[in-house]
Amino acid sequence: MGALALVVLMSALNGFETSIFSSYQKSDPDFKITAVKGKSFFVSQQTMTKLKKTPGVEVVSKTIEGKSILQYGDQQTVCKVVGVDENFFKRIQIDSLITAGKPSLYDAQRDSFGGVSSMALLSEGLVYRLGVGKIDEPISLLVVDKAAGIHSADALKTQVFIPSAIIQLPEEENDHTVFISAKEAGYLYDLDPQKEATALEIRVNGFVRSSSGKMFDLQNDLQEITGRELKVQNQQQQHPIMYKMFNTEKWISFAILTFVLMLISFNLVGALTLMVLDKRNDFILFRNLGMEETMVGWIVFWEGVWVSICGSLIGIGLGILLVVLQQKTGVVQTQGTFNISYPVELRSWDIAIIFALNIALGALSAVIPARRASMLSNQTRVIVHK
Image (tube, rainbow, N blue to C red; front, top):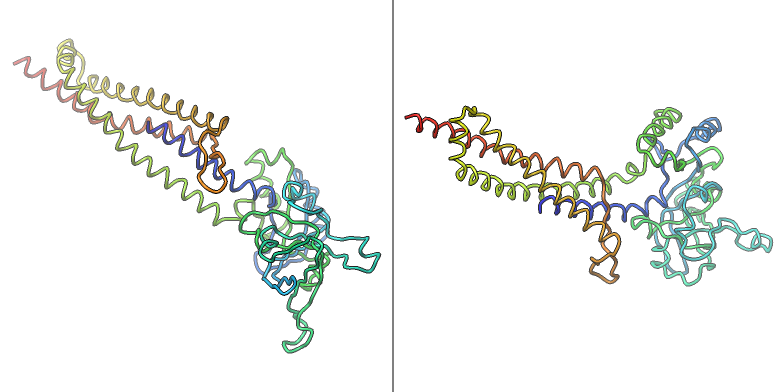
């Protein structure tokens, strides 16, 4: 039962982890290159060429990020502005994230008629917060002009955009993110989009992504190209707090259930002890036939180990059966506004840890009864000789 519970627990936590971080995998780059010190950095053409020619790299996209005040009608809010280049739509899985509109950063037709041609992608939560009624209604981004004086009438740079689409992002980014072109972002933040960036976002091919070892090697290669002044982060390193929090919760839950399993293992100690008392006449016979004292103990010890192995295999098998049944049928539903099936995911590494843990606890549980059997057989032999 302990092995079964551990399999179900770890599979449920794995399922939630996959569900939560799948949204990050759609929107986040495989690797993100940022400055170690400061916010922006110079990007040479030579570095860009080396990155693009690195085996396994599919797309390299430059971004310019900053804070801004977004104004829609009479409402204002602080937002995160991300200026992206033409490779952005190749890097991100844009089709799976768009909930309304058609993603575009420039409208040539509006430009030909003298209208606002700069387009923006708004995150879904930001649209709800501001109550944007129509996608094509203009919004304004206001940024402090560093070159202007504090009391100047032009202390704020203002750019007007037309929202072209609504994009669904992970929760922590979904309520305050705006995507515009790198050219417009460069103007707002006084950066040259051709030579400067706040981040380089890299997408790798599926062959490299399928292997953690290849991803690790590629990260080292990218770090050698960029040098010490820049840092290369994988998806986990881009959200360290989130990953650490989830892993901590997972292994604390595992530790609590392991403690319960230790309490369950005392049943095996009691069962083996009763077996030793019940079979002491057999032990007397074995000792009189010449069996060594240690051999009697080993008999009881291996009895406990085999009980643990059989129990672990049965429990793990039943646990895997329940998880597969949940994956196929979704019989267990979440409780809330929207009922969905609990996500579960089996991982071979977790199964191996659970099996090893059960065997170890079973072996430890058999040590005390085995020593008792050895001592009892020795005492009974002395009595028989007397």
